[in-house]
Amino acid sequence: MINQLYDTSLSLLTDLYQLTMAYGYWKSGKAEQEAVFNLYFRKHPFQGGFTISCGLNSVIEYIREYRVSQSDLDYIGSLKGNDGNALFEPGFLEYLSQMELQCSIDAIPEGTVVFPNEPLLRVQGPILQCQLLETPLLNLINFQSLVATKAARMRLVAKDDTLLEFGLRRAQGPDGGVTASRAAYIGGFDATSNLLAGKIYDIPVKGTHAHSWVMSFDSELEAFETYAQHLPNNVTLLVDTYDSLQGVRNAIEVGKGLRKRGYELGAIRLDSGDLAYLSIESRKLLDDAGFGQTSIVASNDLDEYIMDSLKIQGAKIDIWGIGTKLVTAYDQPALGGVYKLAAIRNGSGEWDYKLKLSEQLVKVSTPGIQQVRRFRDSKGFVSDMIFNIENPLIGKSTMVDPYDFTKNRSFEEQMHFEDLLVPVFAKGQLIYSQPSIHETRQRVKDQLAHFYKGIKRFVNPHTYPVGLEKHLFDLKTNIILKLRQGQPAAQ
Image 1 (cartoon, rainbow, N blue to C red):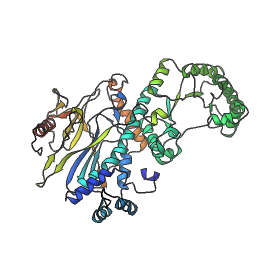
Image 2 (cartoon, one colour):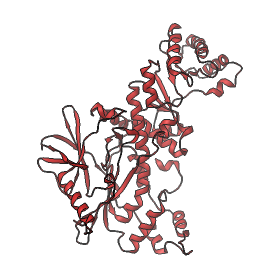
Image 3 (cartoon, rainbow, N blue to C red):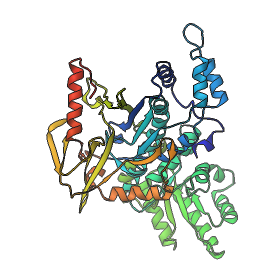
């Protein structure tokens, strides 16, 4: 579906250095060498305790439609090196023109609650192809996971209230707007104002009128009456153009006229001022006039913190219209996902495990062909363990905190668990049955219900236990020690 936004190949939705590395692999005879990369993030966004995985559907569509078009090849062929000569030789362009993706991809399903260092995607295949996928996969996963997480946080505050996404006008371009609408719906929003997102992704759409409608008439009452006359089955009246409470009174008059025609005043909308006070007073006016079923919509640069404050103040808001701070992930505009080489097949057909060292412990990557096992008890999910599938887990297993080896936990063989990464592509062929966007949205709700409420706090959230299986922890430690000592890291 992502390709519906662009009538062009998206193979060049990548960075130049991915292509220069691909060329280097090709020139050195390494293009077909099998490799494994893991895509993960290092820290939860918004100083929170959980993240919602999102974007897999877009990844699937991107890979299914992947092609290097003739215009792509023409552009690549026009690139020059520092000496003014062609950067890539014709043989490489011919290779790209005939290339078909042969990567196998395992992924955590969209809508799953995930945690730092867990691979959201594991990509295995020819190293040249794995490399070319790095930038687009990060682009598609990072942003949507960020917005879905923001939306899920707002849903936690809203509880059963209706959430409407109104962010297209403030979004980061058309693709940012459409994908944000998708991610917001998955994260827990009920509808969007974005018609293109509604069409492409089957998201419910909502909307009525703006201040300009009211201002175009001689009076607010005339504007309301005219709107109700022509769209009686979609009446939400924006009441704050001039005087909010007088606007509510005018809306009530229009509501009385609607009732005579067999319709109801659906809602009034407050878009400025003291939303707590105005919603409380508006509720009194509506109830006293017999419009107890008319909802109150609030908007105006809302986020989960303002929503929480308004609820504490007793605001009478039923529907929340949220735009800028949702679709731009206003307080943290990037997730910070990374894509790291974790294993490469050597000449003997064995895996050489790889990791990236750093002076910062959090930036030291983990080697291995990773899987995530989530354990649960009768109360819900209790811990996640990352392990290397080349070392199958048999019997009792032990998990070690990657940042403090003195912290460990053992799991008996009979303990309930699920392995989170599932096969999506097998050597380039899609083998995954994609759930609908509505099923994915429900998965978010179901997932969050099974986690300890402490991870859902906004202030000092509980840290959910995630660690490395003991053999993987030892493997990582041994490779680090060898690299620190200047020895080959191959295992």
